[in-house]
Length: 459
Figure 1: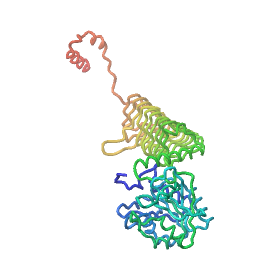
Figure 2 (figure 1 turned 180 degrees about the horizontal axis):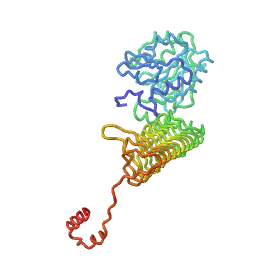
Figure 3 (figure 1 turned 90 degrees about the vertical axis):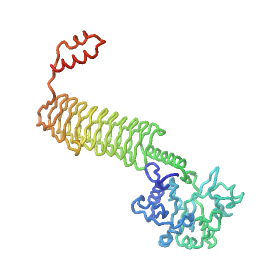
Figure 4 (figure 1 turned 180 degrees about the vertical axis):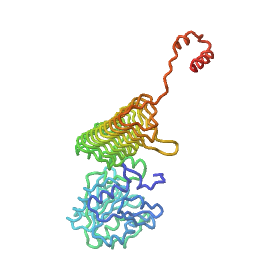
C-alpha cells in the first residue's frame, strides 16, 4: 500500500476496509467479533464498538493468526473466519455458508469460487465424493504441481468451523512449506484424518475473493462496493440518473422517490427524505435532508434541512446550519451555525453565521451577519417576519425585532425594535456638473484630473 495507514484502515465507500467483513458477520448473527491484529500496528482503537482485538505475536501466516485467538475459539461453538482485507462478502452469503455447513454436519466449510485466471490463489482439491480434500497454496514455486495449478476453483479465504475440532487441529499445524508459515487451510486435511467432513460452498460471484494489497486493488474493490450501494438504493425506490457520476457511501440513507441528478456525492451519515431532488453536482456530507427538498449545485456539511426547503444553486451549508420546513437558502448563500425559521428566505448573495432567523423573514441580497470581533463569535437574533434590504450588515451581538425593516446599505449595530425601520448609512452628496467638467479636461493630463477630482470631493 506504501502508506503510513494500516492497510485494513483504508476507507472503502466511507468505511474502513476491515469494517466491511465485521458488519457482514454481525448482520449474519455473529455473537462475538474478534479481530486479530499485528502487535507493531495495533488498529484496536479504530475498530467498531464491541469488537475485540487479539494480537498475533509474529507474522507467521493465516494459521498463526487464527491460533492467536485459540482461547476464544475454545469458548465458542461455531467459528466464522473472514479476511480483513477482503471486504465484499455479504451477510446473505455468510448465512448461506452457515446453512451449507449445518446441512452437511461438516467440521469445516470453505467458501470457494471459480476464476478464469486463478493466479496465485490457493486451489481447491476435491475427493471423489465432492468434499474438499485439501487446499493447495500456489504463492511460491514448489507449493503446487502443474495438475493442481490447472484447477480453477479457488479458496476465497472465508471459512466456517466447528470450534472444538478447529482448536485441536490448530495445535497440530506445521509450517513445513516454501513460505515457512502456518497456513489455515492446512487444518482441513487434519480434520479429514480425524474422520470429519470438510465441504465447499461455491459462490457464483468472483468478487467475494477480491482482496486488497495495493492502491490499484483498493480502487477495484471500491468501484464494486459503490456499484452495489447504488444498485441497492435504486432497487429500494430511488432514481439515480447517472450511476457512473454518482458517489454514495455505505451509511447513506435514501428514501423512496428521491431523484439523484448527475455529479452528486452523498457522504458519511447523510440521509435524504422522500421526494427530494439532489443535484446536479451537489455534495452532502453528514447532512440530513428532509422530504421534497430541492438542492442543485450546492455543498452541505453537517447541516439539517427540513421538508420542502429550497437550497441553491451554489449554496454552502456549513456545520450546524439548520433550515426549518419551507425555508430557502438561495444562490450564493452561506449559512453557518444558524437556525433559519420556517418559511424564512435568504434568496441570494448573503452570509448568515451564528444567527437565529425567525419564521417568515426575508433577508435581502448581501445581508451579512458580522459575527466575529477578532476574538470572539457573537450571535445575531432576527425575529419573525423581518425584512432586510439589500446590502445590510448586522453587527453582532444585535437583535432585530419581529416585523422590523432595514434600509438598503445599512450597518446595524444597535437593536431594532419590533416593527421599526432601521437606517444607518452616510448622507448622499451630489456634485452638480461634475461629469461635464471631467469631459472638458485634457485627456493627456491625468494629474490635473486627479487633483481636481479630489478637490471637488472635498466640497
